[in-house]
Length: 392
Image (cartoon, rainbow, N blue to C red; front, side):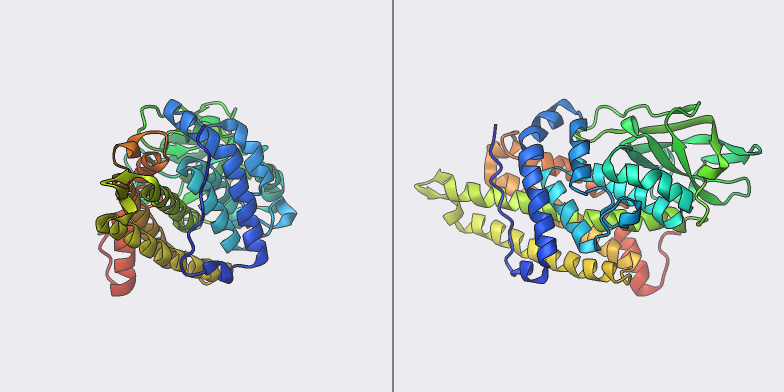
């Protein structure tokens, strides 16, 4: 079993910008990843299976909705703390971070932000501890980048509504206890509903055959005349601003998390370059290898500065969706570029499961696509700086 030798790159001494609490949180989650995730993740990825036994530990580490107030079972932490947690989890594996991101940003966040007090008290404490697991239903078979085209809908039936439709590419779906689902009400307005496993007509078939996020459980949500009590409708939001607000929270976590992949790939390639001998000296002594490593640490450092500043703004309630969008796109692009360069430094060894690089590279093909594709995020930034909408 390979030993996790990861060392955090900090070229610009950014640790000096973190509080003691931030560093304590990071050290705790990092130790957890090294002990509980790194030794098993390659085997689970090879088998395309999610290690469900880690859910309890993730809850104990506070990785599910750490920004949720203590009143509702969360830790009441700031958003830099949340980002640090996601970075450490994704350094281990994107699928593990996805599980935590969905739980915190796409299930707990909308219940906290848009839910009733009764909904918050009923669901949030159990979600925070991992006693309940959730998923988020927005993407549909024919509507991904254009969620406004969604077809899922519900009709009024007295004390409940009848929900019909389907969602796909849903992380956590196969084992989720609840789903926060977005659908059109009888007036055509988009509303959020909490759908519980066991409701008749609600099924969650698993998606198989993935080459990416293999250690994450992905599935569909199918609603066939599902009776949902009206008290399960999120009362405090209507329209696309509901799900888009959730996506901003999730994208923030990805912006930090994807850099975790980049840092792991860089650290692996750096160590390998110092040990691998060719032509009588370590390959790290050659100019082309140094070029790759120098560019990697430069882009990582720029990304670290970007997400740190975003974390400050988010904690102050000043981060815009467009700023979050820029960071998500940049981190994903940085990470996937570094993964590909790191794989080249390792040569043929880079494609084996002995090292994490190829697994990160495959995972990042999903991370660069979900929660808004690379190109969609470019258009979000483009619209923000020009004032012109290029989506239509």
